[in-house]
Structure formats: structure tokens, C-alpha cells
Length: 249
Image (cartoon, rainbow, N blue to C red):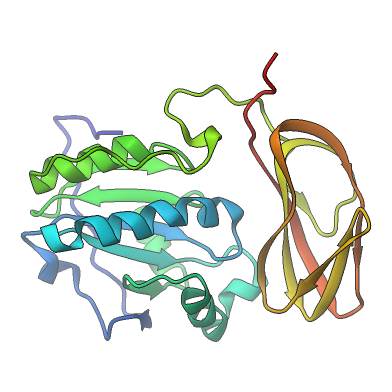
């Protein structure tokens, strides 16, 4: 989305906090180049689903001048730990700079209300485009190209539900703790911590690190019943549901 034409919103400075993949960044030193900032959490499935686009834009447009910055803000107990964040950045193959905002200072400076939140700033530090939640990928990429003065075919949707304009049925709301029961969604994920395994419908899944694990993935929006069992060494902080395209008639 574009901010109102008559409104000028200037980028906040980065707070003093630890960084990954770079010693430190200052926003005032980014003048002259577009900066794409994404607020994310490695324990949030919605953040994991937007991550491939952020990584692709970093690889595709860094040479043209785009700076991609991830601001990691914790939404679950495991994602508060700095070492866990650093390990997740490596595990997820993130090469662009990541600010570890464990005290939520940047979150408050931006007035963030949820994950993920994406902001594209122009070379003068003015807000040019923004998006909340999943989706809007082609719109964001077109805005990046406009600021850089390049023209390429945008990335193809990674998942059917990412296609522009697709209408998705509402999925079951996320549930705290180790939820078992009925649901409607395209996929089921769990925020897990500890060491051991979980069992979903008789299938076993190893838990080797804190994070968000896929439990069930459907080809389309599906009604089902989740049966989740945990080893004693595993904690489930939440069960999350992702959208799916309607089944073709």
C-alpha cells in the first residue's frame, strides 16, 4: 500500500541493539538507497512464509542498491533469546542484516501491531510503500523496481495462495498451547521448544531446536481433526493455521 500523497512519514532510526550479519547499521547512513524493513519472528509461521520473498529480493536487487533489513521481534518465549535468534538466522539461510529487537524498541518506534510488517523507504528516508501480514508480494516488488529504476518480471508466486487477487477461505484461528481438535485450514504448524519428538496422526516429527514446525500440509483448504502428542521434553507454545486455496469444484 502507498501512504497518502499529502502525508510525509520519515523513517525512525535503528535502536541500539545487537545485529546479525553486520557489525551495526545506522539508518542515516542508508541515505540515497531504498531500504526494505521487515518485522519478523522465527517462531511465527507467517514470518517464515514471507521469508523466501525477502531473501529473493535481497539477492535480486542488492546490486541495484536495495538494502533489506530484518528486525526480529519476539512473540514467543524461545524467540526472546539472542542465541536462538542467531541460530535461526543461520539455519534459515538469511544473509541480509538482522536487528535483534528483543526489548521491542523498534517495534514501539514503528507502532507495529503484528507479524510480519513490511516497510519500503525511499532514498530520502520517506515511506514509499508498506504491507501488513502475508501477501502483497507483487505490489512490493513493483515498488522496489520503481525506486531502483529497473524493470523485471516479478517473482512467481511460491504458493497458490500467494497469487494476486486469490480469494481464500478463513482458516481456524491460532490456538495457545498443544491444541487438539477440529480445524479448517491449508496447513497446521506448531511453535515447539525443547528436544524430543511429537506425533501427529501417528507420524513422528523430531524436535531439534526452537521454532515453528509444519505438522500438516494440505493441497487446498481442508477440514480436519488435529491429534497432537508431545514427548515430555517438548513444549508446544501454540498451534497455528495457514490459509489454503479452495478445492476446485
